[in-house]
Amino acid sequence: MEINEHTNSSERIIYLDVLRGVALLGILTMNIPVLALGNYADYSPLTEGIKGPDFQSWFWGTVFFSGKMRALFGLLFGAGIILFTEKKAGENSLPVADAYIRRMLWLLLFGLINSYLLLFTSDVLYLYAFCGILLFAFRTMKPRGLIIMSLLILSLYSLGQGLIFLENQEHRKVWLQTETLVKQGKKISEEQKAERKIWEDLVARNFPFTKERKAEIKTEAEKKFNTMRSGYGTVFEELMPETIEIETTGFYKGAWESFATIMLGMALFKLGVFSGRLNKKAYLWLMFLGLGIGLPLSYCATNAFYVRAAFVKIYFEKWYVSAFTFEQLPRVILTLGYVGLFMLICVSGWMKGVQKILAAVGRMAFTNYLMQSFITTFIFFGYGFGMAGKFSRYELWYFIFAIWLFQIIFSVVWLRFFTMGPLEWLWRSLIYWKRMPMRVNREEGRGAGEK
Image (cartoon, rainbow, N blue to C red):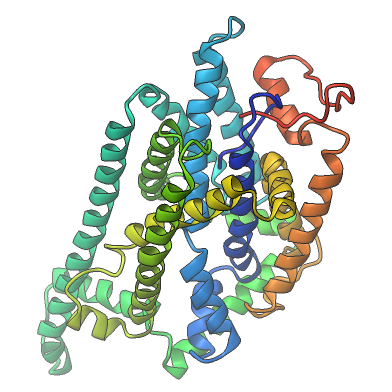
């Protein structure tokens, strides 16, 4: 997530605030089902049928939001890297490398707190901090090189997903070849048994329409919900294996996307996309191409995921490429369409009231992000209200709207008196190891913050 950690109104780029506000509010739509429904969030639309509100909420949420808000955060984080290092290069205080590495290390620590103390399993701060440390070396690369590197990383990731698909097809072939032998009671090798088990496990995870599988999924989900409604210690013990996996082996998968989007964001900032230097026509083209290509691709990709989950046998028999092979392409293209849309709104001066609201939320993105973690875990876990599993997927939108409203009001009111959010202030103070000013100087006007 690109998060401003300190404040200077003369150097602030308001467009980044608006985009950050969009991403911050949008990502809640994807994070809250994970906390409220756990792994059942992936299965519930399929077990409840394809025509109900749960399915529609899952489907259209996936089309418009899933991965796109995270990609937008990646772009903005990349922009923040360039903005921060360019500003520091012109200062004579703390050397740019020192300030930058301190910034990333403190961000990493906040990510660990989010995961292990607030028990938020979808944290991105830890991942972005690691990526940010490594990408410091690329800050002077030209935009063209950054874009090429980004596309190369996305291509390699997509290729890897395709290879996994082909490997699973081979497991299916072995299963088909040995099925007759098994039915006849003939012996098969241990290697063939292992291949068969891999395929059978894959089918079991992705074919939830049988009555038996539906019942099994619901039983597993209810057991999980009961655990999540327990006390802090029980929830901590339950989530630790998942959290550790996400931040170790899962880190490898997430890093591909993060490196690619962050580098693309670095390039776009250097090209002036986020600073409003392009003309309206350029943003209009970015919007039309991004939405015009990205939305249909995202729709097709979501359909592909549904086919994979609901009809996995047909999927591996009839399809020649993985549904995940082109997962990143529509995600990034649609995200760029969103950038074009909101940048066009900003540079055109449209909906200024909405811009101010989004900018306020974006200026306090760090505070608001961790606030979302605290609020949602407290609502759904047992040490709070213990509401895990008590609401269907579409009903979670009531919580989303309520949290949006609260964070908008909180951000707008807070920034009337302070130049930055409380956690932005803490982050900046830790970086420079001194207490930083925070209150609004009425004579100079309200501060706005810089990255």
